[in-house]
Image (cartoon, rainbow, N blue to C red):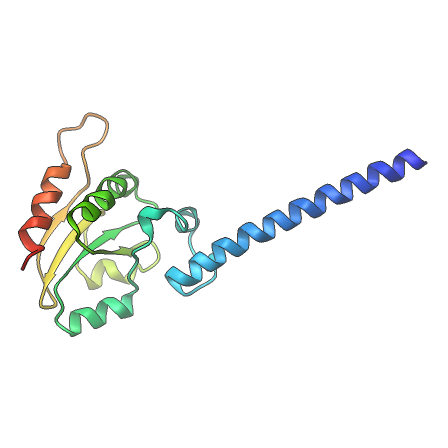
Length: 169
């Protein structure tokens, strides 16, 4: 009987530990979700929850802020991606270090969460990199980096040219 009590105690301690660790993990996700999206993680799509703490997806812009920048006639770069887009998952880790190297601020817009952006900002495919001048879209690059030996796509050099073309204007 004594052994049964010990085993039961160990099982209870293990479950309590798992509960605490799960709570802490969810708290971290909720903090990241609130910071980036203004909602708890449970309100986001699973693919978005998976990248909440990925350093490559931390420069998010929400629709209201984007609309304000356009209305204020600002000039800026914007990267439209989908958290569930396989091409974006290959391109973003190439694009983010490149923009940091060039000193370019590129806001990110997650079309998985903000679906109205497809039509509102005339986006057909992800990834799409856009340059807005005085609040008007003047140029864009559609498509990501070449994958698995493919020859089609935008190389890091092409992205670099695009940034350099507009970053000083």
